[in-house]
Image (cartoon, rainbow, N blue to C red):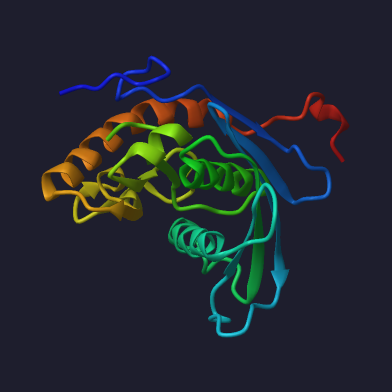
Length: 235
């Protein structure tokens, strides 16, 4: 049974998306990402020489710093940092810049629901802006897609799902398949909160994958290479 949503959207409908790149002058890469009234700003610094303690020096290190809108970081922010780190490690090509650290700073501007997916999308856009090599992009979605803050508070359970997207991938086509299947058929990150049945979870996967087609078109438009206005002035 389909449900009525407070803002009039259908269960399959995302809120309006907006993405801007190169929004911070001193960062190596930056982006802002909006999903409705949820907005996240991300800055990328690096790769810088050296890795953090307990990191593998034969690979690049991804450092995540999550800054809430107000106050200090707590348990939830540290959990978000861990999820983001694992997600970005799985899509970045860590062997190209061994023994380096890339810092990704997440600044929450406003939280009106779906904050973690919004941050993942913003981080991917900022990494592209910084020129960090990626295997593929990550897209996140939900069963009631892209819930608002009020909808999240009323849910019994929800899932954050991150799917791979080969838009702008630098890998050859044969490496964009796993076991003969396109990489888009896989999943990067799955985080659930609350209790849901197996059927509900499978429905989440089905609806989330269906939403990636809309997200792919937006990513392709927003993250395409930015050309200089007058290339004849390039030194």
